Length: 76
Image 1 (tube, rainbow, N blue to C red):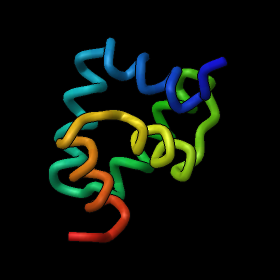
Image 2 (cartoon, rainbow, N blue to C red):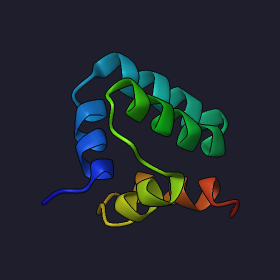
Image 3 (tube, rainbow, N blue to C red):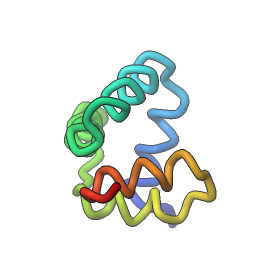
Image 4 (cartoon, rainbow, N blue to C red):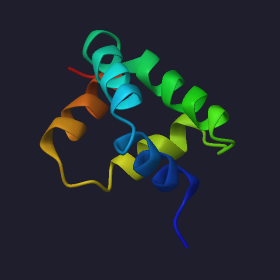
């Protein structure tokens, strides 16, 4: 069974407006993007924590996502 973070990721990926807004937030404030992902989850009635989002995104084989995660965690 897929996780709530995975379900939410797929919903965001299929919603171009939410995806673009989240992308722009992630560029300027990676940590705020985590909050925004959780807020989007509330809109879809999908409960996720920042830790769950990070854990799921860590499994995705995408260099841009991996670089963003480092920044969201406070790294360089």
